[in-house]
Amino acid sequence: MKAKHVILYFLVSIIISSCIRDEALNAEADILSCTLPKAVMTTSPIINNNSVTLFVGPETDVSALAPEFTLTPGATISPLSGTVHDFNLPQKYTVTAADGVWKKTYTVSVIDTELATNYNFEDTLGGKKYYIFVERQEDKVIMEWASGNAGYAMTGVPKTADDYPTFQIADGKEGKCLSLVTRSTGFFGQLMGMPIAAGNLFIGSFDVNNAMSYPLQATKFGLPFRYVPTYLAGYYKYKAGDKFTEEGKPVDGKRDICDIYAIMYETSESVPTLDGSNAFTSPNLVSIARIDNAKETDEWTYFKLPFITRPGKFIDKEKLRDGKYNVAIVFTSSLEGAYFNGAIGSTLLIDEVELVYHTEN
View 1 (cartoon, rainbow, N blue to C red):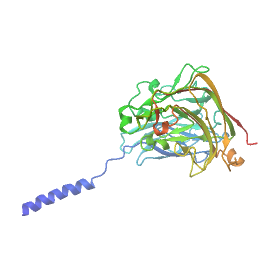
View 2 (cartoon, helix red, strand yellow):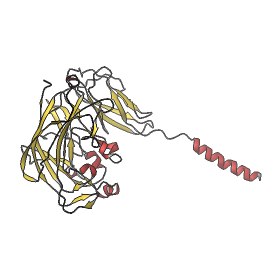
View 3 (tube, rainbow, N blue to C red):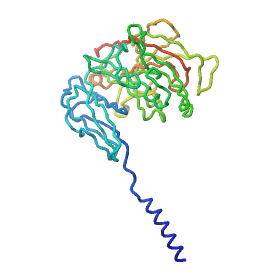
View 4 (cartoon, rainbow, N blue to C red):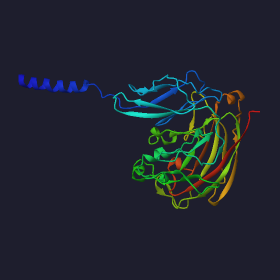
């Protein structure tokens, strides 16, 4: 009996010891939030997998800003949070996880100019595995377009930048242009119930961490705009893919179609951005410009979409001056692509786009 008690005591000791053993140190190295205490931020920052974009008023002195960061538990950042830097150029920050092994480098940028309103899709960031379209002003990036390319990279399907749903081609209306193609997501996408990925491009940011679990919420639409938009105009070509599918199953007699639209909405602490789940239904919406006669066309076709103010809505001049309204422009090769319905091969080309606006008066 004594021997059995000793053995039992030994086994219980092992179990208890394993239960109270120190947990492994956190291996995450993420920036969770970022603020500028001594500068007026016009909207919440955009935090992606390896970049942070901060938005301040046009009169802000960006030569001496001290961003403060919240990190994953136990992580550290270099340069230190609260260190003053000149953000006339983007700055690099390295986050080291609590385990001291995992590290991630972030590029932190400060945007102190108005939103770009003319888009010819000639400019992209170099050295990336997929196309990232940008707008520049005197060689400074003042706007970075968002797309679902980062989510598509997780499927393992693309081999080159031209294999992604959103990319650039040379045959534009003038010069190069934007090309959006609905792609198959391969075995991984089928397994996740996401058999296709529509090509898309939009003003805002893409939250790759939610791409699989909450795909509609992953597309965060809009950036601050201090004018009243009146039209979205530009040129497009469109060719639908051969076989329309819903939930991966063919639908006889149904053709795919593209979508082109823009929205203006009021922001607040509780609604900093709209996303794919509420872009057309949120009570914060002020106006919408959306194509209603999209068609298949081999010729560059002009569109001019008026912003229609929603019933009971108006622009508050003070909020407009303070950057409390966001504007988003969205292009996609499959109208129902957000729900993974569409036709593989559907292709939308976009070029020479302009956001037409007037002042508060």
